[in-house]
Image (cartoon, rainbow, N blue to C red; front, side, top):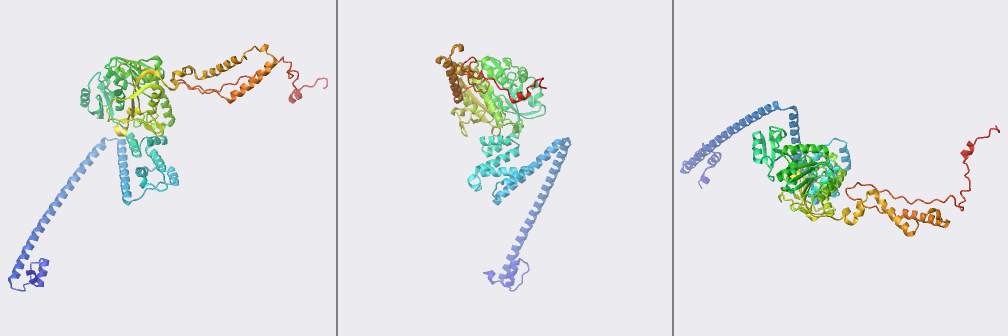
Length: 620
């Protein structure tokens, strides 16, 4: 109410917060208003002063922070300069390349986010654009961006795909880009996309670009893992224990070469891949057993088997290549193995030479598609023919390994089959073939259940035995070890079954591939004996000769119409393509046959002979 009674000049002065007021009245109301206004102005001035002080303090703090950052940057620059003094040119160039690659990745990721924010839809390049790209050097940044776009579309194909494009078009584009970006052959990229999803395929390829950490195995014949780790730590080795193994150690950094320490030379440990521990753990060899390692070189798994047997029993280490046995013998001597016998035989012939084993370990030769990080040349060298050849050899070796085992063994009868490949043709298909042709079954590996992926029972159009789910796959992008496959078999009978080893086909199995024609000759002889055609030629009459000619012509037609079925060639023997049997020779007519008028006729000389005929001397 008192504000309403105030004159306009006083109101405007209150709004402007001024001290000078125009005195229009001498009333008490005016004095009250002046006092209130002065109090408000004093309070606001105090608040403004506090705000100014806070701002000044904030500016001082910012200056201090900037000075600290500058000092840190200067320290870093000094450290980098010191490091650069000790770095070589190659290290500097590699660092520059890493920085360049990181910048490219950051820019591509930022571009990808911008496109996603703008709502731009990805469009597959046309045939003309792809042809144009093939004549130019590859742009890795754009290819990687396209790979992520295609994978995003394949993961949500129903919503993100183009109307006129099929899933096959996107898969082909993805395979072509992966082959160029990671430098693989088109066949291997197609193989990996069949095994894994698009996201997992990229993870697998990225894992192959990273080197695995060095792992060593403690030789329990000479030391314990704790003592070995302590001695290596004292030498400046940064290591850690392998969680799923009792003897494994992982080496991260080392100031000394791991393969030249006194501990290594004295045989306290073996440099060995972590994945090669798994088959020996599955074999579970025991003391006083008779064990065979069919492909033993260079001796990492054989020495582990000997350590698990505590140098008791008999260990036969075989390898088909004589040159590789030298490294095998050297490692066995260095590690102190005394229960081993080294042999040099073809593994397919071992059942005829050595048998009656309790356990057999077969690390079969393979394409090595699980250890690409160790040997990058595999990316372009391996073809479909290599996979087929390895698969055929592995089937023969696995059957031979099963034949070497004694099913009546009280403690064993175990076969462990393993490869360092991830293909189904070299793993599940080989074991499934053995299940059909030998009396064996798949059993649990005895490894941790959460460690490894179960084997496949169906792959594309192929169907395998359900027990193959007990086998285990290991991949570099999921388990951080080399790709590996392990399957444990138990033999329950020494009898062979099915296929070419069926006892019903024993007669045909004993024959060589080129002896199968003796069967047809034998059948022909039996037919001739039944007809009674085995008669002396000199006692035959003319009618007999005519009938013989007719029968020979009819037999020749019979051979042409009905070709004999080839006898199946047994496994393990050399494949020889059978030659078609020769038809029986047609018997010629007798020269002294009176009915034959061809003998009386003289042959007329040819025109050339008549021209060359010499003219008599008298006529000249």
